[in-house]
Length: 151
Image (tube, rainbow, N blue to C red; front, side, top):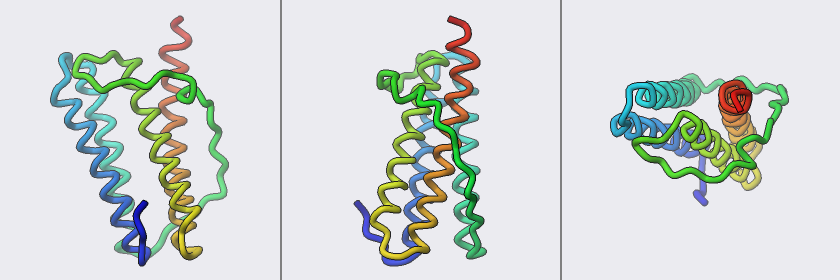
């Protein structure tokens, strides 16, 4: 696990993680065999770009709004099998993949909050974990609305 000597180190790490997510979804979009899946992956990449932009803004402005909002977890993604990214995956598989990625990011930021050397870093990581929980919830709701209700 990375050792952060400053808030900027932690934010740089988070910014890099968001860029990796942008690259991941962009690569899936580029390799998608059908236009619908390409558009889904492009949308996921755009969202990750927005997260990265927000983190860059936090770093520049030195302000970060913390929320006490409790994010509900439907846990849908927790009970689905892992999906391998392929160019011809279904929308259902893409949502599962997105849920799993967001859950991993949530866990990473939660773990980093647990080992943060000071309260500023801890609070930033907890807030980032909360953001990832929101993203996971969004994908779970989409899955529930468009996959589970169809079956």
